[in-house]
Length: 250
Image 1 (cartoon, one colour):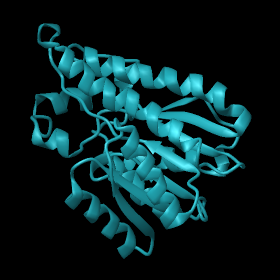
Image 2 (cartoon, rainbow, N blue to C red; image 1 turned 90 degrees about the vertical axis):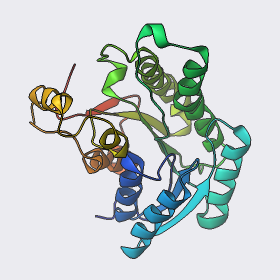
Image 3 (cartoon, rainbow, N blue to C red; image 1 turned 90 degrees about the horizontal axis):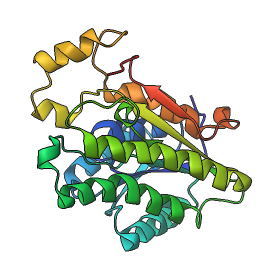
Image 4 (tube, one colour; image 1 turned 120 degrees about the horizontal axis):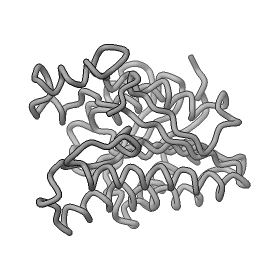
C-alpha cells in the first residue's frame, strides 16, 4: 500500500503508544515521517529505527507542542529534511483521571495546554508550510469526548474541545483545501495503561464486556483510520469524527 508516497507527515507525541504506531503506519503507506516527542528521546529513536529498518524514512524532532517556538522549530526541521509537510497528526496528549474534589487549576492547565492549545498551535503553524494544493490534519480525540465516565471531567472536556476545533477548522480551512478530521480511539492498551491496573484486572474485563468486538484495542487498530484520512481516498471528507473503538461506548 503506497497511498501516501511523496507525502511528508508530522506526528506529535509519537515516541510510543498510539503515536508510534501511527508513525509506522504512515511510513508503511509511503510517507516520510517526522516523529515529534517532548521528553522520551529513547522511545522516539526506537520508533524511527523501526521505520528505517523497514525501509521507510523518518527523523525525530524534540519539541513541546505547548511552546510556539518549539512548534516553529518542528516545522522548520521537517521542511529542511523532507520539504513541505502535507499531513499533520495531532496525537500529543496527556491525561490524569480523578474526582471533582481533586481538580486543580494546575492539572486543568496541564491537560488543556497539551490537548487543546497544542492542537491549535501545531495546526496554525501547518498553515505556513502546507503546499498550495492543501493537506490533511488529523486530530486524535477520544471516545471520552462524547461518551464520558466519572473521574474524567478535565480529560473528557479537553477531548470534546478537540472535536469542536476539528469541526470549526474544517469550515475555516476548507477553502484552502485543507481537510481537518478526528479519530477517536476507545480504550487502547498502551504503555500508560499497562503501567496501571488495566491489563488483566476487573477494569479490563468490564471494558471487554462492553465492547461489541470483544477485546481491548491495540495501538495498531487506530492506524488504518489515520492512514485513510491522510490519503487522497478521503479527499471529500472533512469535519468528521471516526471512532476507532471496537464499538465501545460508556
